[in-house]
Length: 242
Image 1 (cartoon, rainbow, N blue to C red):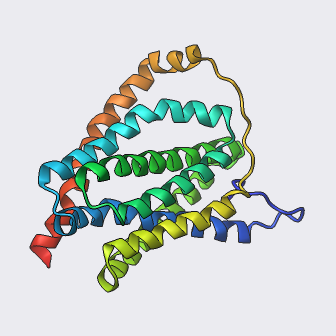
Image 2 (cartoon, one colour; image 1 turned 90 degrees about the vertical axis):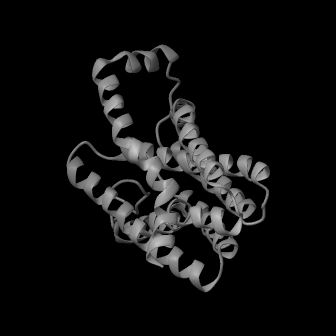
């Protein structure tokens, strides 16, 4: 994907772009299944209460917040390619366990594992892109990269909806876990990113930057609606439109 993948000597990138599209599209099958539809699974199949569902998605958000810095340090000290592979394998395990566990208190650590691995995947893929994208023509590269994400989002929504309707949640979660495991194979062909030992003082300097702080505060306000949507939107559609 425009420098994300290893290319042959002739410089052909068509196959690489197709692999990238399949990579993101398939992973978003799992992403959409767990964001848009899984609240219905929680409520109707597992019989979780509204407060329990809210607790799970709060855990997901907190996991992203507290794991961001360690994940960033890991992507500096270990190649992002390895981090992507690790996150996909962890997602495979978490999807399989989510299809089996029924108790809320047992489901809680499983959901934490999925949250951690899904955030790690997204951060590592973004880091992979930023570290391997050439300086020229950055705008079109970012546009292509984001376009694949939303194409995957569309494919994932359709795939997950039909899969759940024809099969069930448990089978769909198992299938998505299998897809994540398969995706670990082409991920091994991502370009190796440069590693370095960045001092903690450098991270502290970034967080002390006023522009960074203001942008983070804006993101905090902007992202506040995501929690409400993730927790209630799927249930709302189920109860009012079906």
